[in-house]
Image (cartoon, rainbow, N blue to C red; front, side, top):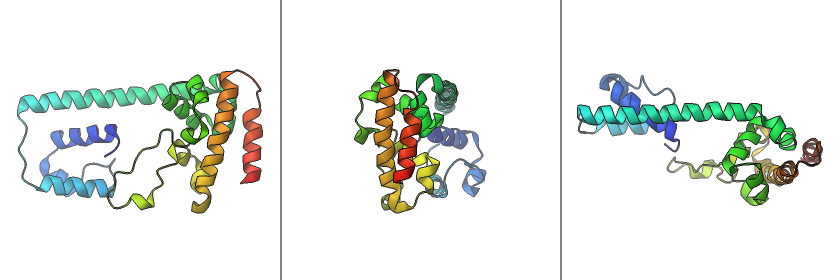
Length: 196
């Protein structure tokens, strides 16, 4: 599992759940089928049960981690609601959700403005953890792969679209960090649609 929140939830469900229901696959609604199968194989092997002290410590830590992830999500929602004030051009180009994630991943609007377009393209991307399936997933798309326009595009044009968004994002981030030229995002988005 590449996402720490999913890992913590899985650990919590293993420790709190009945072993029979875990093996039956009733739990773990948040995992993919591949992850469920791997987990069931691991659980079917002989393993040692943790002591009650270790279990208590583990559950405290996983509960704290899950709580931190929930607070992170709340902060991201707040940041998303304030995006029109922070980065109006970037919001016009990619939408407030993607803009907030890009700014968060970069560390701020000034930091995002300093990043070259080739690096913005992969910002926020995660490597695939599925062994043997690495050819099916593109690793160089980052946060842009979650955008509806990129997902709906034909597979052959997705990378080109991501590159165009990354280049335009760099321009908008620089304009927003300097607090200049409102309307640049809408203009770049129209140009991007025409080129696409």
